Length: 416
Length: 190
Image 1 (cartoon, each protein chain N blue to C red):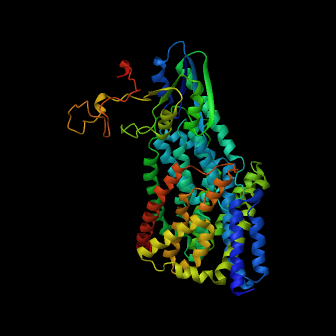
Image 2 (tube, each protein chain N blue to C red; image 1 turned 90 degrees about the vertical axis):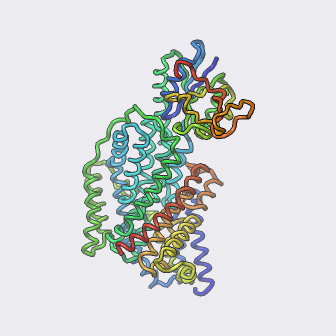
Image 3 (spheres, rainbow over the protein chains, first blue to last red; image 1 turned 180 degrees about the horizontal axis):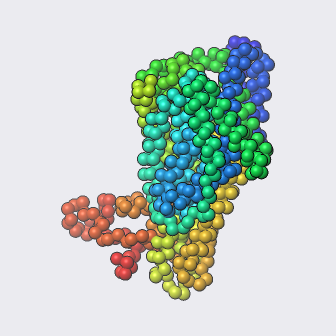
């Protein structure tokens, strides 16, 4: 199949994949539709097999990397890392809400940068909520700090966000250089979040708790050491030109083996942490978007996307990426924008990441489509947040985009 | 007389301290704490919004709600101890805080609430959104107490018209010259 029908069918399949990912009919995993859709794209020749093979070769290590980081975070949780972080924050805050918020910022930014935004949203946020309620302090500012930082603080390293892992392959940057370029934008984004949240929640950050935050959970030394060594491994492998995904895999194995042996986690828990349906979804989505780009949308996006590394083009690109992320979600947005941005080098790729990573804070649930759908059905476990928090998104996202992109522009001048 | 005390994180001890000497000895007293549904939802919705992550942690919201309820019960029990009265009712609700408080106060004759909001800048909007809603919609009399130190009368800035006391003019501007009605300051706490 070729020409206009091929492009139309590819777009229809992408649409179906995204709709199912948002709607989740009957609570089925997203892969149930995305994998057959990708198979159809290949079977009908919409994406030629040699292009698909190339795409899969580039996505394969990314997905392996993702799986390793998910396992690392999931097993560390089993070992009590996040529970320990919670009781540590409770003790170190000495019951002062502003101090607790500052600690949540430090821990949230660190966890997001090293163990990815998934770890912050799924594993750290519940711990922070429980920490605040046990201290009898308002949980609201701390929970929102977590959900915001999961996005804004995911700029630093390739492992911090799946979007970064995808862009990292496309940009051709080394792990170390990626981190060096993004350090300043990362700090700038966190600083803006702090200034806005501190003010926005001023009325919730009152009082002082004299309650102790429950039994102190000791920091599990072994998982912390494994994670620290894995982080070191990322830098070392990067310097000696070995794929850092190997360091992630080694770290995951080093953590899984003793945890499973001691019975703290079963192999089922490991498989659940790796989230195979999610990995299949990412591969399938990558192939479908690749087909859409290959059949003509790629050159259309290329015309639409601002080129060059001037401050204005970087700002325009970050804003475009943020808007697209809010319309169709950040994964498809980054997959669509990457080929065109990568042609311009590291600067435009990083600007796209600033947009797709920090932009979703506008809606909290990933995209406008998700938000509207969840609002409509109201049958999911959790309802999307209220207007108060959409206002917070509107207050943080534009300044974060502006300041982080400005920092990126400066960083590109210094680091190159 | 049925008095209900609405207790919230950060201000509950001050609320009990301030209210205790004002509650008549023969009054029936209940302590109310509300688990904020929107905060639970915020934590859960972020996890559910991750694209492609099929059911990242089922039951998460309910686990957190159970923790919040247990903490609320402990808070109310501690407040009952602080109040030092026999036979204090304890009410835990879950939902939108301000709406639940108004609902719970339906049978009460008096609702005692601590001011929330930023108390470093007094004036219009210094009440937080939840207290503002409760003051506006409560189905009974509301006693608003300072959860910490009562501000000095000097905290009122000078009248914008240069200190002329013209009582015929309606109060306007950021700080009305007269103390707001319904905020009794007991003499011993001035």
